[in-house]
Image (cartoon, rainbow, N blue to C red; front, side):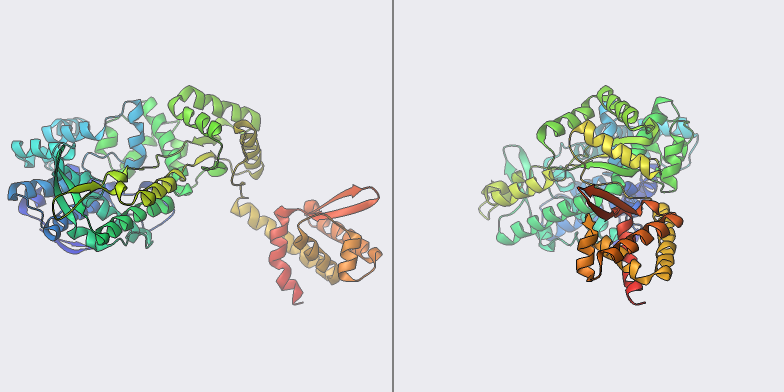
Length: 531
């Protein structure tokens, strides 16, 4: 079989591999997105686990051929088959649903066993009825099934490392693929890595390492940095994290009321699962919002600068559902925002691996760990991964007042000020802009000089007295008072009466433009300055 790949050109598969491609398990991967809800941020990121699996198979071959790895024809065939099947046991929305293992969800090792021994097929036929598509257990020989299971579960030493190591065919494909489809340049690592793989005899048996040379070390660093940058810019983008939290909450609802069962997650594609979950009364609203990208909004965000005691409290919620639900209830009660409109986004795994342990081997077969050669670079990389810690509280209400109240409540409840402030919804901002534009136009028609005073006040972004304005404009204070009175009247008549704030200090009166209007006023300043 010849397959045209957007990244690598033509990929040639054997007849046996072609028969695996046509199985139910592999075809299901056409409907499992590689990056889940990341396409809500990067619209072109619609690539799937299916094409990634073929890409991983191609990368495995490229490594073997360019590195000249001494491998038997049988092991090479098994390696390529395992590369094709490495994601076959992954659930729908894999990066999200895999977090449910703590509540008893099957793990990858269990499901791959079910796929290979026929249990998976029996379950699919039981749930979906007769399906004419072959399954993996129908295609693979028994001996091959056992060997592939060992490779995919970490028990075939260097063969496992080539697919699931620190640097492997899997990561070399997804870094390139995710970068390509998000339109970001971060996956362009050094290609010299493909000729640097080596088999090393260690006390743990034969393992994969890399040629000990400056060029190889630079190649390894380029890959590790690409992985970090993509994680920061793509995998942990706040929009996809919010969508993830909405989905996993809906999934828990659908599981709890038996709208779906745990096996549905492993036999369905993403959209199929989402539409099935819509049958849950509690999950329906969240599913509809995901389908139409009506996402919750950030109202409270903490990062790695958060004091350790507060971080420890937050991380404790991940291990204690009762504590998490109590926090949500109290925040709801104190803010007046309903619980169903509050989601607490616990920190996502930072995905750090101990890259110190990557092996480097010399021409004399002596090997060392990477961390002994570039310890400072690896330590710095680990610190950068740790800096990705994020915690958020999200609100489903579109009312700006609700967003602000919830944000302020979280500041008090968690004892630390949020890194962000809620933004006004676009529709509300747009409506305010139209009203304010009309008010400024009316003010300019009444007295153009008074509109200049309004713009000047907006630029100050602090309380100023009429005398300060008079000095700057080089006019009488009484004239400034007239302008300010006119601004107040015109703004009030046009529905913007809250635009000006005043205060007295002794006998002196001070004026301030409310900042929620200030940005919109400053947008109009250039237009009016040309009049």
